[in-house]
Image (cartoon, rainbow, N blue to C red):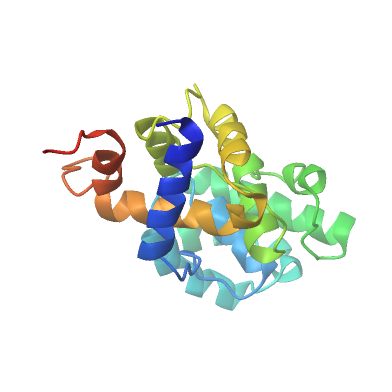
Length: 209
């Protein structure tokens, strides 16, 4: 079976499993999505969703967030990892949004990645899920599963993203990256049993006669 054939099987199975792909992070607009994704580094989406309601009630937009002191932001997000760094980045990010973009989240990678605390993956999520621009954000679930399915030999998420984009149709990228994340969490967790990972078995186990 070729790599392209494996990719087609993966895509077909994921579409059966997850025909609807809600974004795991609670948000109401591009700004709240940007903040939620920036907060999600090295923590779970579930934890981010627990703390963002209070944050967004106090700072629902870039201007109101820019007016909070760092210690006020830290108090609101203290339950998640790296809260010191994230609080500083959120304050600086909000200030830059206000000063350079009129409080509006930009729609280019260059402008997004220039924001404090915003890397390529965060920018890709915003581009794809806030603005519908085809992107393939690669997180640890996707990186691990793409290697497990032998769809990439990527040593890092940048190489894995390149391979994913070459294997899957562009119009499916925004949906597929979420489907793979859902699959990883449900069937093939990084820690614990992967006994439920039937896609891997489907791709590599020889059929019994």
